[in-house]
Length: 402
Ligand SMILES: Cc1cc2nc3c(=O)[nH]c(=O)nc-3n(C[C@H](O)[C@H](O)[C@H](O)COP(=O)(O)OP(=O)(O)OC[C@H]3O[C@@H](n4cnc5c(N)ncnc54)[C@H](O)[C@@H]3O)c2cc1C
Image 1 (tube, rainbow, N blue to C red):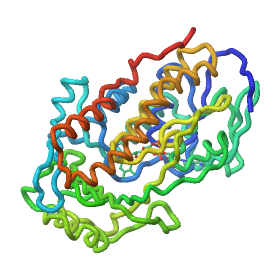
Image 2 (cartoon, rainbow, N blue to C red):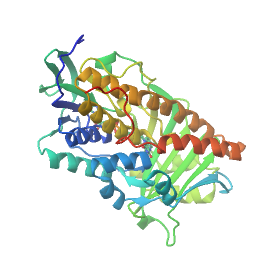
Image 3 (cartoon, rainbow, N blue to C red):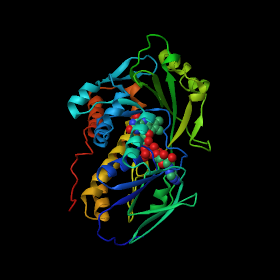
Image 4 (cartoon, rainbow, N blue to C red):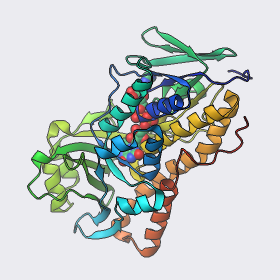
């Protein structure tokens, strides 16, 4: 453990994990003139074929990173969002279309293919520094002292720099190296995900976003790549997750059985899924940490605050973290000050998101009974507004002393 760090500007940062959070952080650092080197365990830096909803706060971050237009151009703009009763299909609540959010927050809501988002971030990072991404590097451990931080990988390689960012996701090994081992808890929920190409959908299919709310289950679908696909996310309660892996193949009959009491529109969409493209995930999380940083190292994204999907904010917060962390590093005169400023700016928001996301999941899985009365509607709108109304590139950062 490093007790005191010399006062000097940070010139070179190692980032473990080239997911959405790691790439955003690297790109943000590069934009502030700081060198970033990324280490990814996969043989190639790619993303899973699925959708992700980018809300105004995420789009503002992507705009700062210079990839906002590229990402939104290839995506589907929200025409609004409907919450519907699982059995009857009755619309319980409507959310406004992208234009309303653009007028309110300066950016809209977009449905983005994760691979497109990942590709845009990766290309921008490589355009700044063609040699900065190192695939096939599985982080194993680190040591740090007055001179810097040294990171070691399973392939025998090691790397040294002024600072380290652990952006290695919910099962972060960097987190364990910094803060000790802790169990990763199963949330009692499973998510099924699939992409349905438009060629499998009937003519005249209505490509809108809707979430059907049922007892202990949600069924979300929305268009991607300007109606080239429908993205399907079905989240269901399940007492235990006994699979060895976190992600396993699922079958269409299994999903149909789970959603047998949902209306025909939902069941018909499930029947269009090609079974080999259907996966299920056990949703896991870790409790909030008292601090993210230790010495020269810190965490971001799911490594710092694993996020359940019910607020649709996990990737958005990972992008925000990267943009804010780079501002703190660029604006502070030494590393401890930068990391302290980063945590002050980010921890309360991330902790609240973790908590509120799980609570919103419970509420949505009951909403078909209580329905959305005016009070609940206003509360839910207020909750979402606190996340959407945030620009990581301009939000005030306290006490960065130059
Ligand atoms: C069903 C579902 C739906 C979701 N929908 C949304 C949504 O609509 N909007 C939204 O904002 N969020 C959504 N999320 C959340 C979002 O996907 C995550 O919060 C986000 O991907 C976190 O990004 P990350 O970069 O922190 O971590 P990850 O995406 O997990 O990336 C971590 C990277 O680190 C690498 N890595 C791991 N271990 C090592 C190691 N030892 N050495 C080197 N590299 C390593 C991994 O290979 C990976 O590339 C959803 C999540 C789920 C489960």
